[in-house]
Length: 214
Image (cartoon, rainbow, N blue to C red; front, side, top):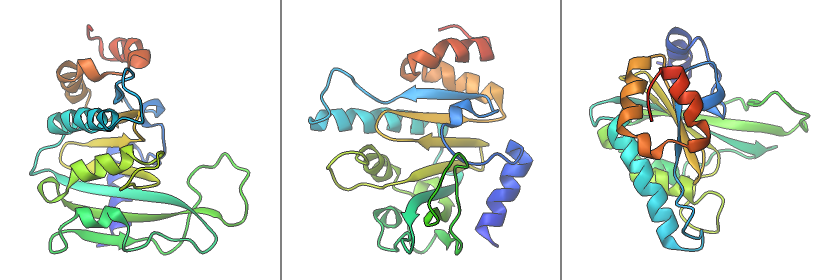
């Protein structure tokens, strides 16, 4: 099956055909916004990145189970003949004998707020597998490293679509993570379990939307 068609159909049925772009928290769907930073630790310190990955791991443990069916959309800005290479660090985090990977042949403009040069477009790839077969810890670390002179790193946007739990998650960089879902009861449960990681600037809006206490 064409994985891009599968994703499109899934988003149409469960998310009213939402276009995946950041920030997810300010989309038309209820969601949570998480803070991954320890602002008391400098970004030159390994402990800063350890904390980012630790917090993301805590969110992961609550929101993703090993048996969940996961679809990942990875999109990366490229110029002219640039493309996502098969030796990209991301692909090393999947089991070759279980994961399905599909590249999109045509490059697309993701954000429509231009102006764009003729060659400004993005490549996309979709990967599916059970959560247990994906090395999420390495993926989270590589996203945290994205804007720093640290390796390994993954440039671009990586959306984790939990087909089992009906959630969309975007760790946008070392600073934070958004999670949305049409299931408000599930989001309330996540809020209660992860309240200490909620981004404070967005907490009032979240509390009002879900009628929950801090």
